[in-house]
Image (cartoon, rainbow, N blue to C red; front, side):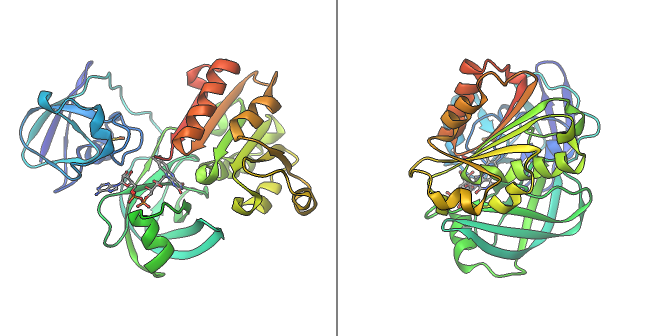
Amino acid sequence: MRIQINARNRGFEFEARSRESVLYAGLRAGVPLPYECATGTCGTCKARLVSGRLRDGWPEAPGRKHLKPEQGEFLMCQCAAESDVTLQVAQLINAADPGGCSPDACPGVLRGARPLAPEVMAFGVELDRPRDFDAGQFMVLAAPGVDGYRAFSMVNFERGARRLDFVAKRKPGGGVSEWLFGARRDGEPLVLFGPLGAATFYPTLGRNLLCIAGGSGIAGMMSILARAAGERYFERYRGWVFFGVRTLRDAFFLDELSSYTPGVSITVALSDEQVPATATQRWPALAFAHGLVHEVAGKAMAGKYENVRAYVAGPPPAVDAALRMLLLEAKLTSDNIRYDKYS
Ligand SMILES: Cc1cc2nc3c(=O)[nH]c(=O)nc-3n(C[C@H](O)[C@H](O)[C@H](O)COP(=O)(O)OP(=O)(O)OC[C@H]3O[C@@H](n4cnc5c(N)ncnc54)[C@H](O)[C@@H]3O)c2cc1C
Ligand code: FES
């Protein structure tokens, strides 16, 4: 199917595979269409159908609340072309950044799922061929017997990776959660699409790094830390990580985070309990504080925002609170803030 997209500044044409969403087809063809979640929740990928027929893969998608369907608006991440189509996107679309990793579909198999904390599972996906991705990116993944794709951020960083590592927070009743925490079997086939996302870190950035993560939002930060440490970035720039969890039992990756100190200063914020005495005995390289992660970060970072790039990830309320703090109190400009809302 041929897709013609007219953006505010220019037009693009590309081919879509059968049942492939307009968004994934465009990104695969190197057209940087607007998106955020790539899975139907945020509404960022809205476009207008000018001519042709579309099939909506998920008519109940929460992101549809941002649409005016009577004007032909639809979500590019959920709709596939059923004929040649012409579409209109309200935004400006510029050429893709050269050197970015191009997204595509890639099959893989599940490997080594293991619990990290009561409601958190680590898992790997062994890919059928090596893939490049940037630190801080995510993949969308389709699991057996579950409709649609779910987004998960890579934990590892490697060029030409044969395996991608992820962590998943359990969502009670969620399709992939129930599969992963219940019936999944090692070696089961998965379909992934990616890499996706703009919360990326490149060693040429030349700024101090501030990472604020709520729960499984630490995933992409681990990838950024791995890339930065591999390039000895913290010999030239400062790094701070604030990792928010409810209680110490919910925390994970604390040994791995300890390995980045003292080059990076790492604070674990516990929102629902006072810091147990055992925490600093067991992880002496880490700092612990009681409070919501954005408040703990705001207090500790006061006066230290010069030349800072901030990365934020986690549940939407935690991300929104951190973004407000960074914009209103820290006065960071929006181009120095990158975030992923785990909606
Ligand atoms: C950019 C990004 C990165 C993320 N990274 C992580 C991470 O590293 N770790 C982590 O724990 N969580 C992450 N999340 C959140 C994670 O994607 C959700 O927690 C996960 O989708 C829950 O899936 P579920 O199947 O258990 O829940 P469900 O409630 O079954 O599904 C949740 C989501 O799946 C999609 N979906 C549901 N039904 C359909 C359908 N019928 N058709 C199409 N799509 C459907 C929608 O996006 C929906 O919001 C990330 C989210 C985003 C947006
Ligand atoms: S990118 Fe399509 S709804 Fe978020």
